[in-house]
Image (tube, rainbow over all chains, first blue to last red; front, side, top):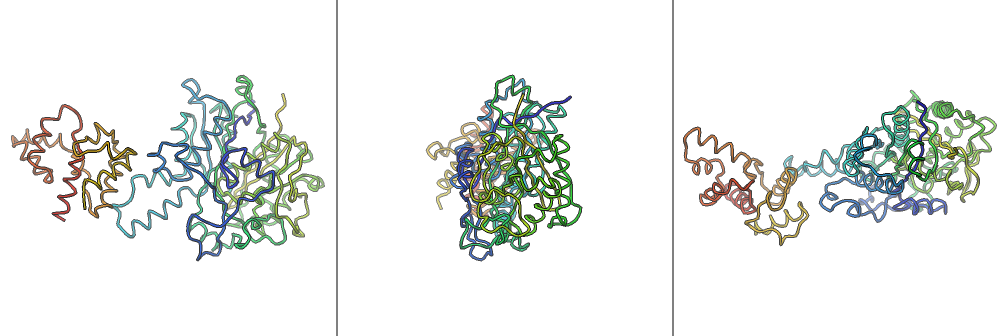
Length: 413
Length: 123
C-alpha cells in the first residue's frame, strides 16, 4: 500500500505569537521572541532570559473549571490542535473517529507541576497533593486530552526523545498513516518548561546563553559569538492525512511529507558525535526514504541551537551529506528567533518548513553577524529570502544522541 | 473563621460556579453536579484551608448505604449506627437523610460544614 501523506492543517503557539499567521509573519520579519524570564524570579540564575509565550489564556480554549486543572503544556496542545483542525476543515465524526491518530512529542512533560507539588508536599504533607497532580505531569496527557476534546479515537501516544520529540512524533504519525493504522493524525511537539529546575539544570550543563543584557541577540546560531541556546516554550501541530482523503474533500494542502530518518549517535549523553556523524547518517536516511537525491534539496531548517558544538557539527554533517551542493542550499535556524522549544521544536520547525514550501519564503537566521569560521554555508542571514522551494529538510537532534529528520516537498499531482 | 463562607468559596472555585448558587441545603451531587474527581480536589482544598486531615469516606458519607445494610443485618438502630460512623452529623440530620435516600446522593453543603467544625473541635 503506497499512501501519500499531506499536511492540510497547521496550529502554532510560539514566543512569536498565538496562531500561525502571527508567528509566521514575525518569523519572516526576522523578529526575536526572546525576553527576560517572568515565570519565576530568575535573579539567582546564570540565565535570566527565555522565549516565553505571551498572552495565552487557557480559558479561550477550555472551560474555566478545566483550564485550572490543566498543566500549561497540555493546554497548549489542546489549543494548538483546535487551530490545526480548524485550519484543515476536517470534521471528526463517528464514521472516521477511529481513523484519526494523535501523536505528539514532549521532552519534559509537567516539570513545573512536579516542582510546585514537591515544594507543597515538603511543606504541608502528602494530604495536600492535588488529585490532578499525576494527570498534569504525564506527557501523554497532551495527546490524551486532545483526543478527549476533539474526539479522535485512533492511535494515541506521546514520545519522549528530548529535543527531537516533535520531529519523531511527526515521523511516527507519517508511518502510522503509511502503514494503514490511521488515515489522519494530529501530530507535532509541545513543551512548557520555563521553570527554575529546568533553567538551573541546563545552566549546570553550560548549555544556555547567558546574554542576559541583550535577550534578542542571545540566540545566534552559526555566529562566532554564540554562547548557548535559549529555552523557549510552545506547541506546533499539523493535521496530516492521506492524499486521497485531502483530495476527496478538496482540502488545502501545504506540503507533502515524503521522508523520515531516525537513528542514534551511540556516542555521548549530551554531546553530538564528532563531525556530526550520526546527524549525517540520519539526513541520508531521510533522503533515501524519500527517494530524493542530495542535489535536489532547496532548503534545510537546521537544528541550529546556537550552542558551540551543535552548529559546527551540523554544518559538517550537511557538508558530508550534500557534498559540493552544501554551499548552495539555503539553510536557516529559526531558533534564532523562537529560541529552542525543546520537545516542541520539531513540531514548530516542521510547520515553518511546510510554510516555507507553501509560501516560497525562507525565514532567516537572525543575529548571524559574524559567522564562525567553521560555519561557512548559506544560512540566510538577517532577512528572509523569497525563492522557489520545492524540497526541504528539517533536522532535530536530542540529548541521548537521538536524531530525527523529515523531508517535505511541494504538493504536485 | 466562618466555615460556611470558606466552604462556599472553595466549592465555587472548584466547580466553577457562583457562590450564590451554594447554600447549606444545596446538594453537592444532585444540585451542583460534583463528580468524584471534584470531591477529591475538594478534600485537598479543605485540608489546606482548615489545616485538617480529612477522611474522605467520612466527609463525603461514602459508605452510608453499606452501613445501613450492616445495621439491618445486626438488627441495630439505624440512626444510632450511622451516628457511630458519622459522628459529625446530628441526630436530626441523620433522620433527615434516612427520609431522603430515594432522591439520590444525600450529601449537602451543610454536611461539609459540620465535618469541618467537628474536626476543629476534636482536633
